[in-house]
Image (tube, rainbow, N blue to C red):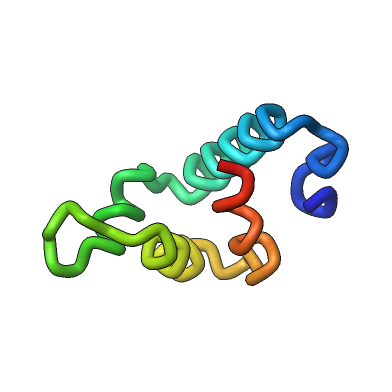
Length: 78
């Protein structure tokens, strides 16, 4: 994770969560995409009940530069 977020691996769990949040917010800003749009992409059946894995799949479509290792680290950080 240090390749994406400097100092991530050395941070406390709370610090990792904050760093991950900041990184994702910046990634969304660069693409001019609101996080709610990612959720809407994942909620194909409009049930307002979406699994986290489905959100990660939508996120990968939005930002294909995020590799599988990075996406697998997101749930642990939160």
